[in-house]
Structures are given as structure tokens and as C-alpha cells.
Amino acid sequence: MKNIDLDQIWKLVENVIYIAAGLLLAATAVVVLFEAGKEFVTAILGRTLAQEVLQILDSLLVVLMLVEILHTVGISVRQHELTCEPFLIVGLIATVRRVLIITAEQSRLILEGNLEMFRAILMELGVLSFMILVIVFSLYILKRRAGKS
Image 1: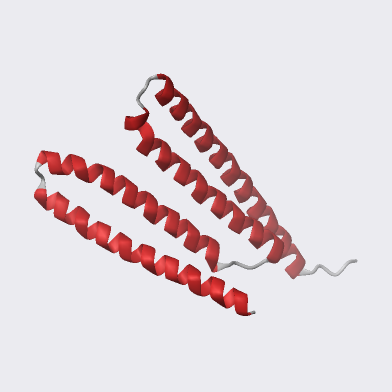
Image 2: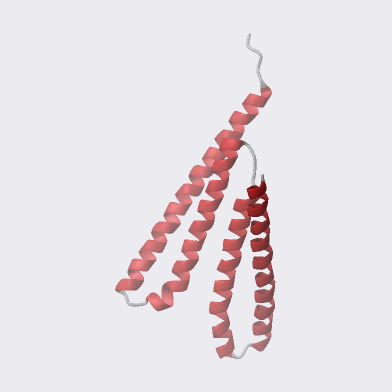
């Protein structure tokens, strides 16, 4: 009777889960990319690209986040470790995505005269800007540290 190595079984189960998650992430990214392409073609044909550009950009940024998470899953399967950099990149993309959405909405709020909401949005933009600086600085430190080793 063979000696069952629990560590090997655990790694196999972990890999199966990572691969399944990766396949679902890839499928989701393809579907969102297809939908963004469809929105783009529809906007071009309907001559409404200027109105639809934010929605299309939003979808493309979601695809980039999914691809970066997929990259992280790939690293986890190959190296059996998690790295910070892909998560920081996803955070950066998500933060920029939120900034784009807020800036598009703020012009509407100014026209409506909702000053209280406008102040809240400015506060959120300030926090998001600070987050972007922190994430970029963190990525810089990681790259610099990786260059020294």
C-alpha cells in the first residue's frame, strides 16, 4: 500500500481550484470584452460614441482587472505563492476606473445644482487621488526592491 502524501494531495486540490477559477475568470473577461466590442460597434454605427465612450472604457478596465487577476492565478499555480504586485495593479485600475466614473457624473450634478453631493464627490476624488499615489509608490518600492535582489 502506498504512503499517501497529504501535502501532494493538498497541492493538487489547490491547483484544480486555481485552474477552475482561472477558466471562469478567462471566460468572464472574454464575455465582457465581447460586450464592450459590441457596444463600440453599436456606438460607431449609431454615431453615439461620445455618449457611450465612458461605458466602453469602464468595460475595458474591468477586462484589464480580470486579466491581471488571471495573471495572479497563473503565478499562484506555477510558483505556489502570492505576490503583491498584481493586486496593487488591480487596485490601481479599479481606482482609476472609479475616478473616471465620478468625474463623468460630477458634471451632471453641477448642472442639477446639487452642491452637497458635489462636495462629497470632491472628497471622494481626494481620497481616490491619495490612494492612487500610495499604490503607485508601493509599486515603485516593489520594483526597486526586485531590482536589488
